[in-house]
Length: 120
Image 1 (cartoon, helix red, strand yellow):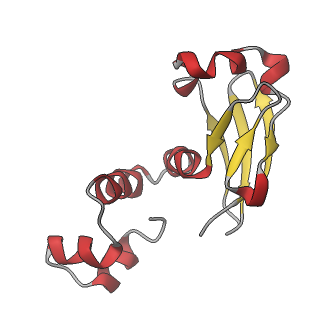
Image 2 (tube, rainbow, N blue to C red; image 1 turned 120 degrees about the vertical axis):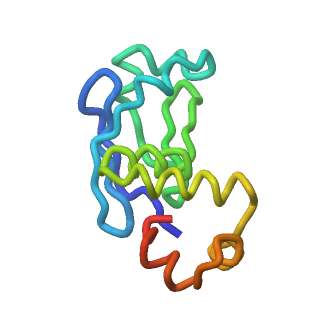
């Protein structure tokens, strides 16, 4: 399981993320921050106070806002040019499918699916 190793605010809505598998990405959360539950992060001073949560499974802010690693990984896939992997992962998880069951549903081998969508 991938975890967040480091996070730093770079701009009013952008985070520089480093993942346990070595992936790095600048992730723009502008769209996410429209959610009223994340209102506190619209203040640049609060957004800048980001820190990695316990065991790297989330990001946390002093205001009590948390963002889970799963949601941030989806944003990282988009930010790193892997939109196809993001769409596949959202489909797979949305249907509650393991990698093997997704492969069965598509009529492919698990190995083939893992080869084409290693980020999922």
